Image (cartoon, rainbow, N blue to C red; front, top):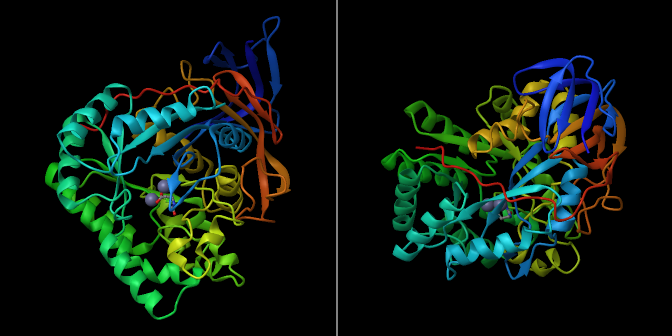
Length: 460
Ligand code: URP
Ligand code: ZN
Ligand code: ZN
């Protein structure tokens, strides 16, 4: 059914103006003043509201076998929650074990999403081993439309790769024109620090931080850059958490390295004191890299405002408190790492970014949508509002007031890291390729309508 959105204030990464938007089929076909609705069209009145491009989360985990368990969401639960919160495209990490082939990983992960997602999706392909067979399979995966890799410098023995493999992965990435996203932490340092802390009887969740202090992450960023610069390969540091890492990335930028930085909504709003909560509550806040000292938050808000940090993602990795986080009672190294935030990223970024005066509306759209589309080969199909773009739109109500709670969220997890937090604004209407998929906190979309987005390499 055709869709007309009337009287809204359109905001993109670079423009702001009042206009109506008409969508016929899956795309935006007209933008203008006083557009008329043809018979049978759905009409949304956006008076007093903003109209943003659908938001993109460039780093999520939905199917994730990890640390002896599985992340809790499925594409059905995750895509419903994403849409209600304004996220219309997910980029998931394919994280096959080191023993598994990348093509088998791609097919497994794709199979979990196809026919199960209400929103569009694509993947970053992890490289967890590098040999001749992997090399040719990675070439095939890129031909199938997956134009980004993922490497882990952490998680030795699970997803982590050696320096030799890192060298060859980045060389291949450069040749294929794909960007390599990277988890930057020095795996050996983490292992040694974990052993030392446990031997000293420091077993609680609060010690997770001390096994991965800022320099461990900064060394990872430096390490990645050293290898990337050998090939002039394009890299993207995922979940960048601290000033020390950002300083390494900025130094790389100054040298001319092709590096982009992602941070997470968790790092902007939560800090290491959350992981120090008593009665094992801190385990809800255990993730890697760990939540940092509060002083880092201002550094990242400033860097976002100056656009030195490109994206705000979630690294959504949901593990229940009961039965999953609890696996690490008495040994913090066994707490499944991850914090869920997929449903709340946009509203929290709006509330603490725009409504709090830290970000302007364009920067908000840029870091939550447009930059991800540009970096990962989705622009201008996604990430903006233009004739010919997919009609993924968020009609946003800045006057809404509400609270986040695990009692009401759509995610399939038994806690929220933001329990009781106030939000000032939420999506009124969310569309996916011209169809209304969420309204005022309710999912109204169609499971299975989400498509795999095929992407061309752009990072030559
Ligand atoms: O703690 C985290 N970040 N869990 C998810 C896996 C990863 O490293 O991204
Ligand atoms: Zn990671
Ligand atoms: Zn991740």
